[in-house]
Length: 211
Image (cartoon, rainbow, N blue to C red; front, side, top):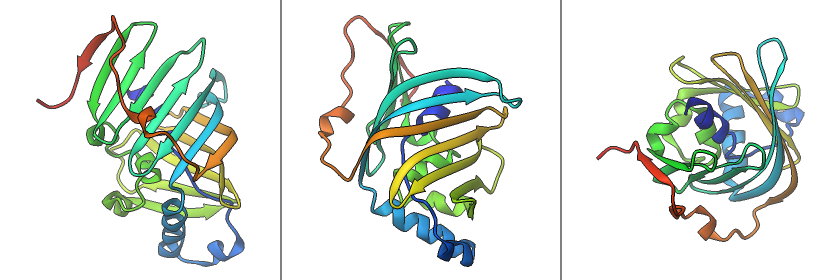
């Protein structure tokens, strides 16, 4: 499920096209600017197109889907046919729903996203910020872990004004996943019921949470 966990917290969300003032600041200034932007991104909904490539640029997967995010730590991520799957984070549990296998896998949310910089997007107050460096280059925020324990080496966030247009991750296998968002709604009302899990009839549950 490493790939699923990486794709997710792809998900999950946010930030902005940088101006020259950001570039003039030091690393702490840049990190605070990013935290401030994320703090003001309370909800996010969009459709997306995802492209996954290998280290040589060969396309491994093309997919479309939709995403909804609500602070703190709530995410709904759905891939549409023919790659149907749903990933749901309710703040405590990360649920992955595979319609082809008719299986649901449940993880402790904090453990599932440990050492993954995408968690920063859904929780600007997270203590995990101290584990990452944040830089600005070519109109993007670049987030890199200080240690090499995680599955994601680099997270890039692309904005225009305060609108999140896309994000990109590169993992330890040198696979790059790019998300381009469309039909974007920021800070609108989201029905919180979308973040509530209900076990599909006939599906098998693989519970990986701690007893």
